[in-house]
Length: 202
Image (cartoon, rainbow, N blue to C red; front, side):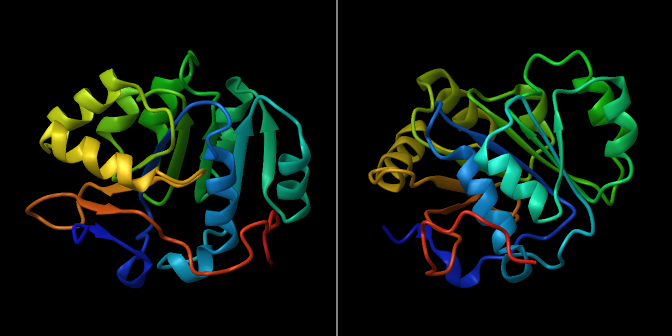
């Protein structure tokens, strides 16, 4: 459909906040790895420091560490000081129930960007997010919430989402402030490269 834009005119303008939503194993973490891998092409600048919060230590987090990303397991008081010194901070399924979430939002500097990954829409994160990425398995109540907040007709949003996620690991990206009139919907932001690539080029 013509209203689903592709990569050709896409640019992430840091500093910005991105909220990634989807069920387990829908490709949320892989999306972020791809994004970091192509950040020099897709963004207006490459963040000098990247901090990645997660609850798991697996192959992906180990590869991120090898590429220079700072990985921390869980969030505690000590973590807040680290957030203030980085340009890009990623919360991979750790922020939804964190008692530190409000403080992290308040302390965010203008030059710091957040990427928040969660199973469901976090309303407080949604309010400060410029871009929303919907993976597979987004719940109906979250679609209704987004339809009201964007605003977009629910049928329009559901239709776009169904088309965008018709293939495994595909997603719908909603750029809330791309124009002053309405959000821009996208189905792909990555250039054609090896889809199995799981490392970040330095």
